Structure formats: structure tokens, C-alpha cells
Length: 510
Image (cartoon, rainbow, N blue to C red; front, side, top):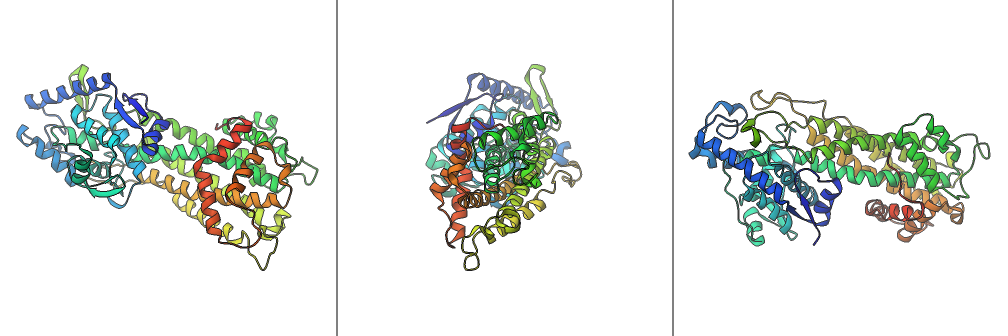
């Protein structure tokens, strides 16, 4: 079994996906274990000294002015978890829940949270042995962190709540028992250390960014295939044009398109068939490039967040201090995740317009709706409808969540980020966009059938071969949804991108 070592400082987005999606195991490095133990010693001393420290010897939120005795500490922590587990709605996917646990472990491994090492190791055991808490996706304000959903994660550690184990939905107690993991009795500071953080929004956003990068590459490939089906003009991708407006994503997209289309006998030069193309073809570098630049920015924010301390109070062993601040506030990533959703939505917008150009005979010069027997057969007519519906839904979802706030905890927590909503919306926008990309892939491949597939460029020939290996040429109407599901799988599994990169080199992402 593959394993990654974590220390709180060097976790990558790729490693998060390895653990969340591919079942890699986790091990905390020895130095990080020592840092966890050291910060715990500080908390134990604060309790013994009856020092007035938020969340350790006081209540939470509006109750921060109420002192809690040493004898009440364990009851306080348990009450915190069971009362805060107020999530509603569908459960997050298993891979997102695994990512949440990993991100929480990584943050605790930095040694600023005052939790016991044994408690952190319980989370590690849950990751490694496949106990995955069922976490409702709704109910977080994104400050003080993801309190409600993270509480559902902790419920299972206590033998409460619900979990998946070996594909079966069980009570938390039964899942932990079958996996041979002892349940935990929390003590001072541990409840806050586990639930006061941004790990839910960050887990959703992290996996969405990873998958969006693959979708960006696929969007360049599908756009190139559409270019060939429509005899698009490649002059618009001339590097001289983009060097005088040097946005990195724009320049890289133009380079990608020229390499994907290299040796194509289907593309044209300006003036051969027409002087210029419509924006959805001519401006692919500007449109896709802007999304790439945006997603690169979001990726940088995520890389910072997954290696940050986001609970409260934060323990500083070197200074014998516990500082109550606001690192749990999701605003730094909330804005980024709204930007992520907008960037992905724009990919779909341009993609759907290219689909329209493929199916509309007045724009394409191809048979109407890409069927050789129009009238009796409808071809891709309603596939474009579906793409248009998804794009319109994305426009609603792309409205930013982070511009909203609502006070909570009797106005003690009077500004919140809504970052978890922003991340979830970005994920939903990506899901829609993947479906739209699948439609373009299949429609472009069908359009190419009316030209000459033997004249495809190096990259598009590789992509066309993968598509046709899964979805045959459209001759007469058949159950289109089956083809669309196959197209979606092609977008998700990354095989088209791998095949294209194998012949032209790695596609640039800004």
C-alpha cells in the first residue's frame, strides 16, 4: 500500500488526491509527533494553573466568559461535538470526507493546536483502515471554520454518528469496532482543535481544483477538435499575437492549440476560406487562458491553506502562550473558491457556444445536428439543449457566496465567509462543465467524420482515437444518454489528456 508522510508543512494537492481518491495511507513524521506532544503539555499546564484561556478553561462563542472547571473539561468537549453536529442534506462523497480527515491531521501535525497525539492517531487509523465518517454537506458558515460538518467527523471518533466501512453504512461505534480502532474520550481543548478549522471547504476546493486542471487541458483538446470540424483559422494562435498581450494563460493556451493541431490538414489560414472565425474559436486563448490564470491563483491559495493552522486558540509553546484570533475564518479561500467557480463556468460557456456552431448548419457547413439523415433522425439536436441547460445553471451557481454574511452566536461571530458554500458551488459547476465538455468531444468527433479523420493533427488524432474507441460514429439515432455517459467518463478518467500529451508533450496551464 502506498503511503505519504506528513508534517504539517509540505502536503500537496496531488497527495491529498492520492489519499482521498486512491486510498494511500498516512504516517505522521516523528518530528511532527514531538511537536504535537509539546503543545499538549502546554494545554495540560494551563488547565492545572486554571489559566483563563478561551476554549480550554472557558465556554465557546458567546459563552467565552463562563469559566469551566478541570472536572468539567471532558463533559465540555463532548457537549461541544454533539451539540455542534448540526449538518443537513446529502452526505459529502467518501473521497471528500477522506480529504477532510487528512487535512485536519496535517493541520494538527504542525504542533500548534494542543491536542493529544493519541487523538490525532485515531484519525490516522481511520484514514488507514477505511473508516469514513458520513458528513452532511450543508450547515457550515465558513467561520468559525467548518464547525457543523467537522463535528460529524468527530462523532465517529467518539463512537457516535455514522460512517462507511468497506462499502457499508454503519453506526460510528460499529464501524470503529469492526476496524479495531478504540473510540476516544476527548479532554481539554481537543474538541476545538478538531472542529475549529477550514478543512471541509478546503477539502472540497482542493479536489475541485485538481479535477479542474484536467478539465482545462481537456477543454483545449475539445476546442482543437472543433476547430478541425469547422476548418478553423490557426492564425489567431500565432505566438507573436499573444506575446504583445503576455498573460501567461493566454500564451500557453495558444501554444497548446498549435501543438495539438500540428500537421493538421483540416485547419485553415486567414483568407483561405474566410478572414476570421467567431469569438468562441478565435478567442479560445483569451477565454481558456483567463480561466487558467484564475485557477492557478486558486491553487496557490489552496496550497497555503492545506498547510496552515486554522483552529483557535493557537498554542505557541516557545512563548508559553495561547492566542485567540481568527485563523478559522474562511475568507481567504472563500473568495478564491468563488473565483474558481466563475473560472470553470466560463470554460463551459465557451464550450457550449462551440457546440452550437457544430450543430447549426447555418454556422458550420455541416449537416444539421450532425446527422446524415436529418428529419428522420435528430442527431445532436438535444445534446446541445442539455449543454445549454447546464451552462445556464452554472450562471446561477457562479453568483458569489462570499459576498454574503449573517451574524451568529448572539452576534459574537458577526461576519462569516460562506466559504464552504463557495467550494461546493464550484464543485457543482465543475460537474456540469464536465458534462458540457463531453458533449463537445462527441459532437466534434462526429463533425470530423464529415471531413477526413485521416487529416487530423497530431494531438487531435490521438484524442479522436480514444473517443472512437468508446463511442462509435453516429449514423442513426440511438440512446444518446449512453453516449454522453461514456463521454463524461472519458473526460473524468484523463485518458484523452494522457494520449495527447504522449504525442505532443505536456499541455501548459499558465
